[in-house]
Figure (cartoon, rainbow, N blue to C red):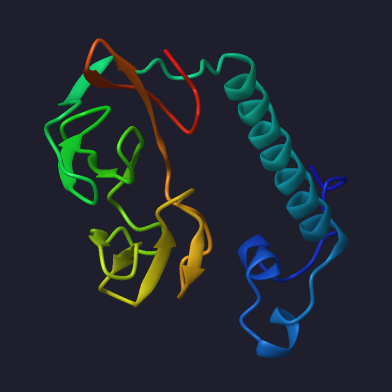
Length: 170
């Protein structure tokens, strides 16, 4: 086995794990190649995982859920509801005689609850003074960078029904 390693008086473990700090700063070619190979394999495996997830991704299906009756709220009125699951709070605002908007009640900054400020006609997040437009959910002011997710609504037979999120319908 002498052809694998040059004969030396130092044991193998001292060659692989130097005890001198000056020798620890240097990386030999074998260690560098091993690092590059393992890193490349990890990146390749990660890319395969991303590819597999994107190929088998299905768009979510949203349930049809009644939210409110047509005359239940006055103009400027607010109703809280949960959609699409019981853990997802939403806020419904009646903006006109025949117009309603609904958004997720979680602020896109740090998930604080937003509420409707009727005097200012905007949705407000009290945690960090984030303000959102009632018309489209866009950010008016503050630290949030993304608009509030909008709940798609449908009016049928005097009943307001939630049918999806962000314009998607079930």
